[in-house]
Length: 490
Image (cartoon, rainbow, N blue to C red; front, side, top):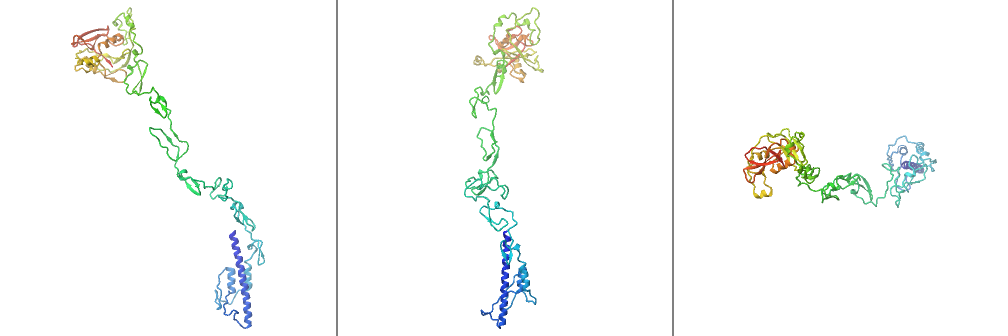
């Protein structure tokens, strides 16, 4: 709008200048004409220096804004002289087309024309103009003063005055954008990556890493927390198993002290047969439930006083045959213990009459079936007196073992369902006698026979002890004699 006003004003000024030039020329022509009639062409000032435009040049300047060159006293002009020129009437008519009411400012008159021109066409209002600035915004020539408080045009920060107008923003809504930034002291590392902020009049783009959620699992060393922005959803992983009963005694993990019952059991070697029946023990990290019934309470030997007959009387009533004693063959077995069938091997080693293994609950010993072929027992004790006195003389280490000891040493048989064992051995005389006392005759297969032991006769080294398991008879015989063999472990 202002540019249009300026252009129109310029046109009016030009028209005024042209008109003044025209009057000047017209007066000059009249004066020259009068001087000519007076009989002289000498200018009053002396040397001729007249410069002027032709009427044609003036006409072209009015109608086409054509630039002309003033003619000198030698009558040189920008256009060639012709026989036809524009009249003053034509020049007047051309001037009159330049002036109209719509081109003259309202409230003024130019060459008799009253102006009607007003600053029309704009849509801005005072609310769109900076506070303190003026412009023609209404349909008159009175200056209007803006009321827009934009940026920091107030001396004191004010939440209302310093707020960017909601509808006046070069890129969108200006709600809640403020101009006070001089108190800012943030740097790029304090602001989230790619996020922008204004600090002390400067736009800052953040460089802080967006870690978001970080989960840290405790280990044996300190864990570093990643530097950057954390969303608040991260955490240090917990473990429900972090309780005192899961921690070894004397150890403290994250403030949780170990239970005094949790100890290192790696040195344990006991098996179920070494532990009293139904009791538990921890051996090398595993819980073992004992199955040895004889050790849970003190052995009660009192029932032995009521043993009326030897076990030959009712040997048929045993774990193998399960036949009752004959009529009139009553017998007390209160002194006996429980014998448990712990495993049955359907493919026993050669010459072994049965793959069944029984365990004496009082001694914990496992007893195999017997070898069907009787054999000699020609062994030689080569232990020192010291080892014999210490109870460490092992018949399995004799240089000369004899056939009976060798049979058991070579036996590979599963005693408890856990796989074949190879620690079978020939029992001693007292182990055979204890087996008889505990009731083997009424539980083991084929007790009717004499069975070799590893016990040598003290007064005659060519003899060894054997036990007749059906009656408990213990005797000695030449080592070269053939008797039966039944193995035991451990």
